[in-house]
Image 1: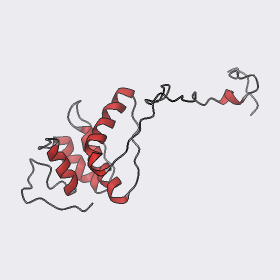
Image 2 (image 1 turned 90 degrees about the vertical axis):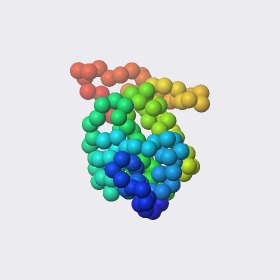
Image 3 (image 1 turned 90 degrees about the horizontal axis):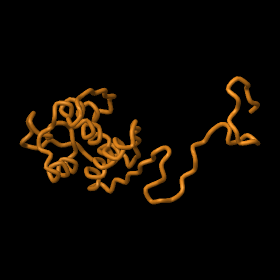
Length: 148
């Protein structure tokens, strides 16, 4: 994707933030017209490939602020991305945003949630634990070191 600026760029829309034209079209189709403050500040920096730490209240568009630059880079270099989140609810919400925005580019997503069966119902292996390799399949005693 190449970065171009739209003729109507100004501080109150997504044009001029360095977002590729196809992504701008996707945002327009989803009725995203005005970036939030976190998006205005984070998107240009992240598109440059720099690290971003942003703090903002719930519902202020943080997901889109990091999704847009990530999707743009993935589309440009035909690469992959990884997002690690602390809760399954947040993981599902973030995946929904990535699917909506990335649909135009054929972006594929997957969610891996510890301790839960995959969405398609296929069996999931139990979490790997050190003691699964021991003969008696019991955890080592906390006060006695176990041989490797």
